[in-house]
Length: 324
Image (cartoon, rainbow, N blue to C red):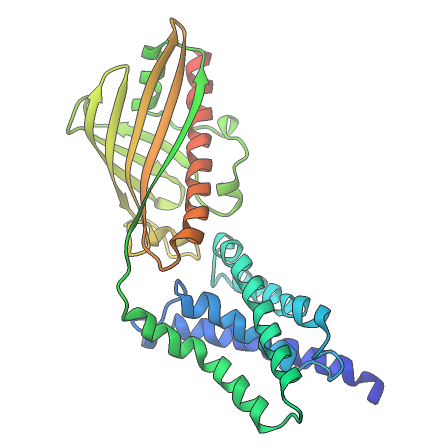
């Protein structure tokens, strides 16, 4: 039986760590605590994996508790299992899992290191280790309510993309103001769609000029109502954007969050820069708001996906304009 003891300890540590992650996730998204807790928080994203990594070492085999490969890489296993379960049961969209995973892996290793250091310091394991582990398990539930008392600041971010188009400014202008439905043959690979986000379908415009309403329809019921605030024919136009999620069906995709307290797309702008009679540089920039307590990390992801979306649209505009 003794030869199976390490295996049983590892299995127990996995069950405890994954179970803890599931429990915290369900607690943080329950209706009873929705105003107090949230998964877009330092308490959940940083301290949940910290406790998860500590649990992995806490329940690990005695010989493994002070083994650096185990406390560094061991916590990654329950993190990955937890991420797969969250996506498989549609608790989270794959995009949310992918964005959170680097934080979870890093913080779980730190949690393993913390517990490793604790075992190195104490001479005789006993009540002290259980008390310390208990404090780590309670950390997300203590940190998050305190965190919610602090004000958050908006981060306004601008993403610029451009593409060379071999067509006249007039031709490009026709294609970027109103967009006929995008067919499957026009669609190309995109990271944002691979991550589960919807693709643009078409765009209509009520009338040319300032005050015109442009409606951009996307998959999944998502739409953007865009009010023209600048109109310079064959040169540039700017639109003030507001997300319409009224037709978005319930799903793990974070579409309902667009325009919410964490993220919103505020403005879009096209600029046609003539190079020659039949060649232009088409510029597409967007302004979005990010409201979290970790703007640097969140901004890396939102900038990446916004840039990918814009390049996807520019490629379609280029192909359509050049085909004319």
